[in-house]
Image (cartoon, rainbow, N blue to C red):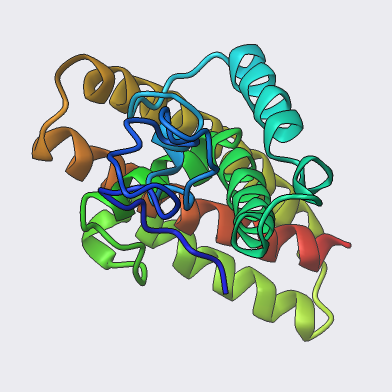
Amino acid sequence: MILTESSAACWNCGRPPDSVHFCRHCQSLQPPAVDRFAYLGLEQKLRIDRADLENRFYELSRRLHPDRYFQRPERERQLSLDATAVLNDAYRTLKDPVARAEYLLGLHGIKKGEQKSLNVPPELLEEVFELNVTLEEMRSGAAARPQLETARVKFERMLHEVDQALEGCFARWDQDGGLQALESIHGALNRRNYIRNLLRDVTAALS
């Protein structure tokens, strides 16, 4: 079982560890922190330096690797395994902009949910109807490939546009924070997922 709650007291010496990873008094490895940003020494920002993130990951990978703890107490050996798993998960999550944003929303109590019509661009409602008609025509043997090719180009363009809008949302969060910025990110992510699913359906039909 992975331990993900940092304690106010070191499990080994009982004093405040004053560190995310190690107790400053006895140098014992501590249970992994819940916040993946904090575990990699980062603020809760959505625009991050990928090279810096990678450097932090590899540095911590060396310091937390289980091979360094094979002669330590059993508790600390298990903590090393837990820490490595949490570190890998944190890196995998934070290196991807969409996963990073979804994770940040979760930290603030906004869960990824089902698509809601109010989060779909209004012009997309007509696109969905036309796409369903075209897909049905293609299933029945009609020559609908040109329409699907046109739809794919349009959805790819829309996906690019929503990614650009997300960058703006990320910048607002990093500068000011606040619930309004989080709600904007949530709405943009919902729109992105909706468009991505449409693009997936078109691509599958064309292949």
